Image (cartoon, rainbow, N blue to C red; front, side, top):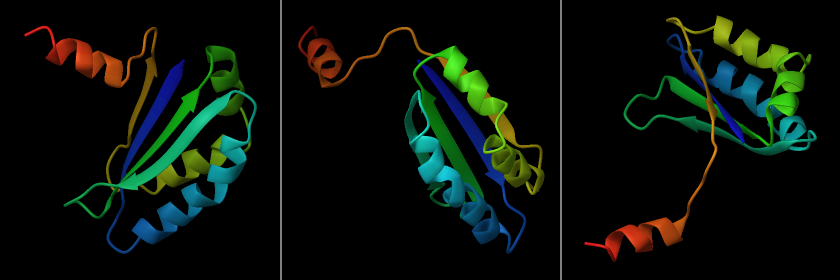
Length: 108
């Protein structure tokens, strides 16, 4: 599983423009083969910092998405950033949920 994370520092007055661009593609991204989720957030206390996250089943579907015209919208939104945008990709080999919390809390 792969996660992509993009953090954009919106110039004053441009946050809504960037949010609109990213929101306009969210539905298409989520319905793309291999996409497991897509999330758009604004950081609390930093209303001009926008975070865009995607979750992909495997590297092949992520790479296909990165080459797509749809991802060009993410790139366009990044170009509006006030500072160099943060772009990170994470490969996840193992995941856990509440069972991990329970296991850790019960082994004290």
